[in-house]
Amino acid sequence: MNDATSFSEAAMLKYFEACRGQYESGLALLNALVAGAERMRAMQLAAAHETKAKQAEFARQIAKASSLQDLLILQGALLNEYCLRAVAYWSKLAELSQRTQAEIAAVLRAQGTEALKQAYASAKAPASAPGASESLASVMQSAFAAARGANEAYVNALTRAYPLAPASKKPAKAATARVT
Image 1 (cartoon, one colour):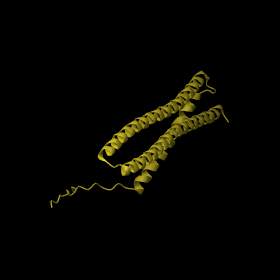
Image 2 (image 1 turned 60 degrees about the vertical axis):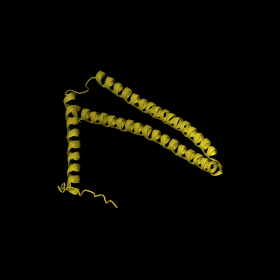
Image 3 (image 1 turned 90 degrees about the vertical axis):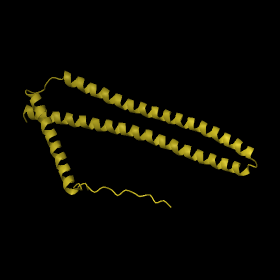
């Protein structure tokens, strides 16, 4: 093997490792998003169960009420309870959102740090073969051309398999209101 071929293979391996790193970073970011969504959904479910239990309790109290004054007292208590619970719910939701944002920021910070390390290492590394930059450029161009060709073939296959229906020019019938 000549120097240009071994350099091309090394460049492709570095490119592959960079892609793998981006994939792993994307998965870490997705995991942080999903974990945040799961925490929020669990909190929403708990709030719904608590609200249902409180409503059942208030329904029993309303059934036991014997006067209008008792109903007014219950209405005030219900309003106060719901206002306090709404504030607690939105506070907890904001707390969970901040936690998720902190996790996402940590993932992005790690990605940025790794990218800076790689950029610094590649800037300091000398070219290992004569004409190395031309080999790397040709490898990158061929990789992008192959990816572009695969994408175009995929889009063409989709458009042949699922052709778009022509838009109809008929106006929709207006609904008429019937007065009885």
